[in-house]
Length: 245
Image 1: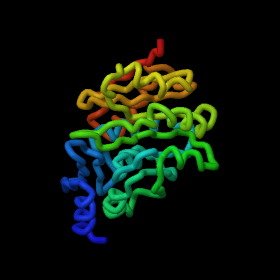
Image 2: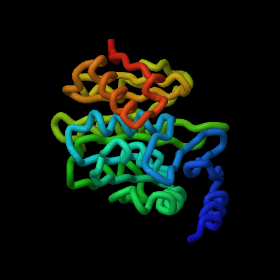
Image 3: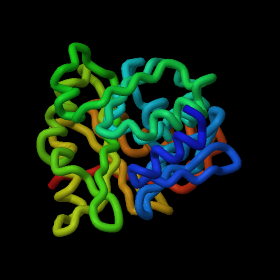
Image 4: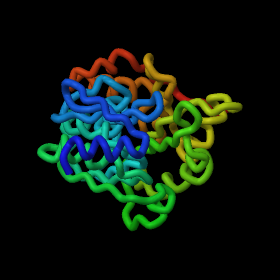
């Protein structure tokens, strides 16, 4: 399918594709779902931070992505030198054609399943070193976390990780809940959890595991990885330990 046909097909699903100097941006409502690049490199967005969490914190090569959109995490991740296969799942595959069109020559092995993330995790026969949970659904004028992200998914993610595995969860505010109430159920299965705040976003990224080396160590590793690809996010994040009590 050619570029114009891909963009038209995505538009029929309510997705707007904005061509940029380095690739394309996928927008739904007022929210950027993906920054897709035509070559490995920094997006200078939240996707760089998610990629840095994978590259810097994964204790091994097996990584699962819950939520894919158009693969905005892949370009920075490959620029960081992470060469391993990526397994992804999403209920929507509209962005995949755009991702393949722009990145087929360099993205490496990226498989995408069309399924519910919880159902997909239940059927996995392998355990992962790191799982990224980046699931959102359209709600009103913006995006929101699915209910399963706060209920069934945290325990499923923990069960599908190897001992010492890491969970990276991209979150948004939930009306009626404090940040502590949002983050506590995501972190409860792990002995250590840290919150990454981003200057330009209301999102917070929870990094949870059993041996992460403390907030200072996580911050140092994320910043070093972001600086290596010259991502502007290196100077726009802060990391704090999440205290459940």
